[in-house]
Image (cartoon, rainbow, N blue to C red; front, side, top):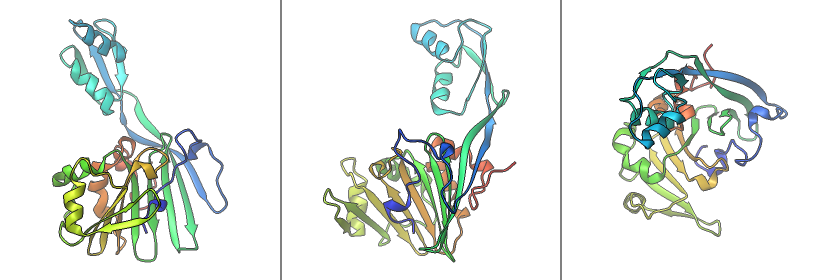
Length: 266
């Protein structure tokens, strides 16, 4: 269900209109909502900068003098890095500012040709999470910024309890002629862990469950894609995996989104 690159999609080209701005298609149920993801951090400059670099960082945060106050999204990686760079010059109080919301479009549609209910949640940035639910099995598909090498390098913390590295591993790639190739598990594990390996698509299999990584080259939003399929329809077991591997907007929204229905909490 989620094993082919064509199943992921969910976005248009990076310069195209977001689902948030498009009219619904026939048979679609669409809802544009604001997802609550936290509060801004209050930042106060308490000391003057002592270098040009520190001065530039403070200005990027909107701080130009001692006593200046700004509210920023402290959990955003780029902002967090700036706060750490000048942490001795500022005072930070998290969750003191206005509530942060993400624009989120939830689109649900029945796909009669494969008898699957498709529900996708897309952010204005193009990041998306998608659920495909059939009679018994279910898949969840999400945007990721992890390269395959980074994903495998972090398997010690990301690896689900059910994922094995024995005969269940396999690799499939498409060459420039569009032909599909597969390799034995042992060759897969050795090759994809090297930096010069550049597969388009890798599937990890275990009894009743599969995990698929797809290269950004197959995704017109310029994100990579991960998908997990459960033969018994249990998607909650993937929640930790998604939170550790999803893009920023998805990861910080998980506490307010039902992973099964993609409905936001009030």
